[in-house]
Length: 187
Image (cartoon, rainbow, N blue to C red):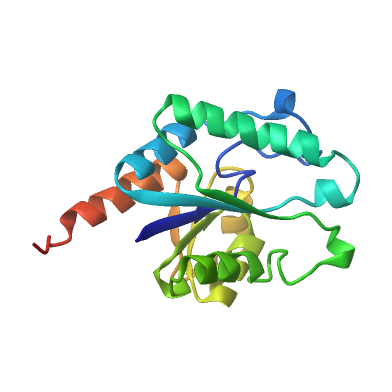
């Protein structure tokens, strides 16, 4: 099974220091939805693992959160793609559980549910906590420069040794699909 785990805000859609609280505030990063559709069409299952402390902070409710995710799924369906599941950590950072990144809980839970070893799973994020969570899960961290990615790259350059860095999700998708196509086919 080929899977990819993506952070949402900053990887799929534009991030905001004020949080994405409604569909009106949700804006996909150019090329990200097409990249997810390409992954799906290349046989990948795509999952999201996202901290959503705006829920725990009372900035938006579950209906608003679900409406954003429904919009994401609708837009992807129009392109022939989909997100297979969305894992999220709703708690306030002061009351973090093992599911909230930088802890590896969401990644490990998805790997367990899919009966996969985390080492086989690329985890794409834009923040240092995404990289830390992937490393803690022993998954393959990937950094994109969208969202907080440029700042993450600048602030953690030395610690990013061994982490693949791409301009955006579309660039990572092109590289991943090309690498998959280069693998020998077993009949």
